[in-house]
Length: 251
Ligand code: BGC
View 1 (cartoon, protein in one colour):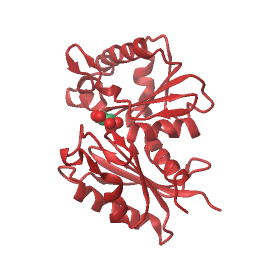
View 2 (cartoon, rainbow, N blue to C red; view 1 turned 180 degrees about the vertical axis):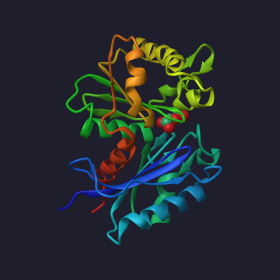
View 3 (cartoon, rainbow, N blue to C red; view 1 turned 90 degrees about the vertical axis):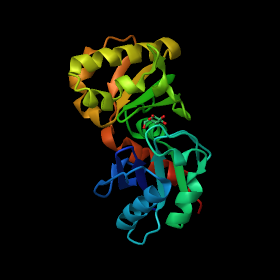
């Protein structure tokens, strides 16, 4: 039986979606992208997701996995850092299931990316503690111990110098403040040094769109822990969400 599922990655600025082969980790369709509806409200986001699924599904009724930039506990979205506050304490899993008329699996975006790196990428067969980080609108983090996910680590919000450090070190801060790679790397140095001092990881992975340009900033960092770019770059969320949807499917 073909192991295909749709993965959807909802972000503060865009929603990306594709059909993935959850065995090989390859995308089987184009990667579609639409802008996140203004305000990021649940009703509008669910409608945008429905339209993407219609384009990708071709009547196959594929499993759908959705990853989301918030804490997701048993299908309930519990926070909303870069998206409408209407998501807080919302049963997102039921909302999407009703809209798409099928069972869906909803998970935090960094957790989905971490799962993808364990299955297909830089954390494959990695022992001990891996910290997956995604540098985008915010900073997403996932903890993986011997390949097992410990969900909802919200370490992008570490307080450093009295501020929520995602506001300083996310890729959006580089863009907003027009920082050079060197200036941004100084902030990343502070962030990753704190992370490694607190958690003593064996491996740190850097994902998010900007990880395509890892040669510009990873060599500027000086850490005790090995730090590598994500292998599945910008598709990690899609792949992880699809893989988890398939794994948790209801036959
Ligand atoms: C959110 C996390 C999310 C990350 C990346 C943070 O602001 O709190 O839940 O994983 O952004 O989107």
